[in-house]
Image (cartoon, rainbow, N blue to C red; front, side, top):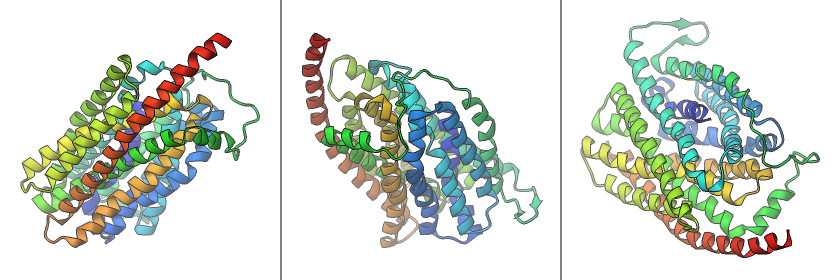
Length: 425
């Protein structure tokens, strides 16, 4: 699952590393490119999320995830042969459709593999796939760019295979054998599947959100805000260093790849270990408390980035921001595992992911691109991204602070109800 997650972020994140040559070859600006990074992917990821999650909740999960991997891998290959903005937009839509299978499926599978007090670390290990994939996107782009400059490959209809095209093709090809392997995953469900479950039946979802409106709302909005902050900065970091500090694509790919490979897993594992540490000591809402720590760290480092003017210090501040932002990728699904019944966990995860992608992935990079128009000079995009990231992190911190109290009340209610249930049994 973690390896599949890495591939999804390889296919998703490589676009940001290739921003400069793609914008030049396809003659598109920052705003349109932000639509390729966010909107095209996120809208259809969100739209297909609930139907796909229904099959996760009611069918063989390995086959559902494998089908998604196959779709997004083929779509990434097609991105590499696209000739204009419209074709690339459509292919990115298909990438989003395929990737809609993975997080709901993986969250559901892992819930059936680990008890509640030991889910933080496994989810953190799963989330390291995100950073391995992000690192791989940087390394792959730099390697192909370095060694393919002198290759004049020409394909009918497509034309010359520029390095950015070859990078996308290689990224997509890596997913095809993985789809075959994932298809054989078999994990026994902790609850039997309802035989009369229907694709369009949303009554269980409505009942759950009526039962826990504050808890689920704070979870969804808080993690959407912190993901908004993360995407607003991370989507533009490669282009910022190319424009502001005149780095080459090879330098950017290698540096960002190394940063993601080291700092990302370190942050994700730290967040998981902290969550399990607090949970073993009976701290209510332990995962939300760790998310609050992450939001505070992101807000401070985001503000710091708006003040620095040299490349080394900027990269150090970015590393700190990435360290804290990587806490949340395992915490968000882990919290849902704690409060959502397994029979509908896939659909709730898909709904949450849809909200995150529609608002965070779509609007985060776009907000930075639009705000950059209010600044001037080569540092305009850096200033705008830093401000947007800091604002989103502050909002997330306020929401997580409120959520820790809501989770404390939730755990108190569970502790009160449990003795009565045991006595009746």
